[in-house]
Image (cartoon, rainbow, N blue to C red; front, side):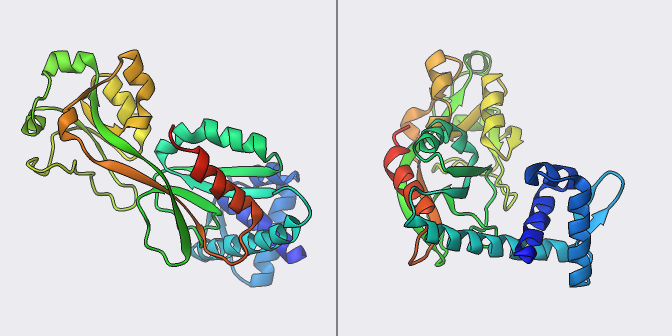
Length: 291
């Protein structure tokens, strides 16, 4: 158990890049954290962190070890959860990842937390492509079905993508009536974090390379910039419902927009699914949509 405790301290420091912050999370001093890491490095015979007076960063060996430790701790936690299933309500830390549009899901996740008070949610909200197994996630919500034989998947719903702009922008630049009109407009584009490629609006008859007034790799800047009149944005409808109701954004080219985003919940495939994951998957599949 001492070894597992040391691995847990290492993971906390690796994720926080700070002895002080890791100590706060663990309820111990930064000095105690530093000594634990020192003992671990001595036992392994390798330096896990670069240290300076201001920063702590993982060495290449530390990065590799971090991924292994996450997996080990997740397996231990899963084994503990299985043993606890017969003893009462689902409990333990539930590490999940949701896309940037997942900010719209937070009220539903809060409802889940009220139902399962002994489950502690650990939420990663970003559009990066996470490795569910290697990074120790219990479940992720993603758009599109991911081809990974290690994962189980369940469709949970869908939403439309729409083109929006502020009334001020349309008054200034004109309202696009057909798809080729996009070439005369400022467009707020999305860049995929994993590949660096731009999201090309998938409409027949629209050339590649739309005029970009701004590029962002998460949803919130696109919505904000569109509200401020920076151009047209192509976004999920669930992300702008309040803005549409308030009149801060309006839709254009509606008859040309047919694409849907399908949402799936994915989790590590296992014959013995921990109860915390089972109740989360069931809740998300039945309660998340419609938003």
